[in-house]
Figure 1 (cartoon, rainbow, N blue to C red):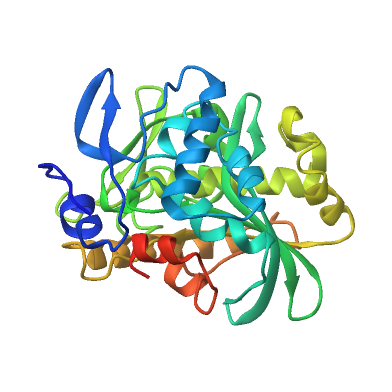
Figure 2 (cartoon, rainbow, N blue to C red; figure 1 turned 135 degrees about the vertical axis):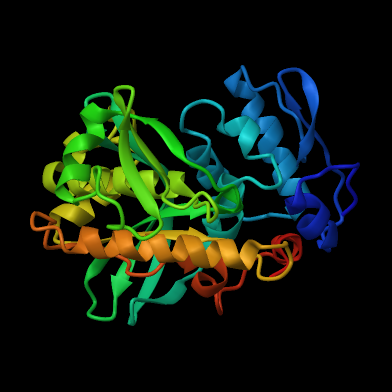
Length: 336
C-alpha cells in the first residue's frame, strides 16, 4: 500500500508492506486532513445513515460476501457515536476486531486459553456492562462457545491494535467509580503492586503513571481492564440489569447463557507487530508484564465470582487466530 508522507510508524513501517491493493485517503480531523491517520473512506459521521456507505466500502475493499458481516458491523458501530468514523481508519482496533473475528459466526474458532481448549461459535461487539451509575464498560468483543469440559463459556475480550505502542499516563479517572476497587487491590498510593506503575490521587481524580519516567508504560490499558472487571462482575451478579437497556434485546443470548450456568472469562488481545515496527516487541513485553500482575491481583480478589476467570497472560491475535481461516484480503492487509 502507498501512503503520502507521514511520521506514524504504523503506516510507514507496517501498512506500507501490506499486500492489500486498495486506495486510501487521509482521515479528516476537525475538518483538516490528518498527517498521521489514513482511512478507506471519510464518512459524514454526524448522521447515522452514512453507516451504510462505510459498510459497502469495507465489503468492497476486503471482498467480503458473508451475510454475517452486516449484522456484526452494525454491532461494532453501536457504541458512543463515533465508531462509524473510527472503523474505516486503517489502524482502528475496532476494525481489527471486526475483520478478524466476525466470521466466528460462520465457522468455529478453536484456541487454547490458560492451557485449556475452547471452541467458539459466535461473537458480539460493543457489549456494555455497568460499572457504577452512568459509567459503563464497553467491551470490544464477546465470544461464546464451550470449553473442553463442555461447559458454556462467555469470553469478554478487550481488543487492542496499536494503542499499546503509545505509552503514557492515564489521568482524570473517576474516584467515585474506581477508588473502592483500587483500594481493595492495594494499588492506591502504593508503589510496586503492579511492577512499573504507581496509582495516585491528583486534583480530585485518580491517576495511573509509570513509576520510572525512563521506562514509560501503556497505563490506559490497565485502567480499562479494571473497568471491564467491574462491568463483567456486575453482569455476573445482576444479569440483564447490568447491561445497557438499549442492548438487552440484542444480547439476550448472553443473559440466557449466564442464567444457565455459563463460565465467564475476561481477557485482552493485542496485535503483535514483532520486528515490523520499531520497538513494538519491547512495548508488547512491557505491557504483557503489567497485565500479568493485574490479572494475578484480580484472580486473587476474595469477592471475585466463582465462575469468573481473568486470563493470566495477555493474548495476541496471532495466538488466538492460529489455525483459523480468515478472508484472504484481510490476511494480506494484516500480513498474517
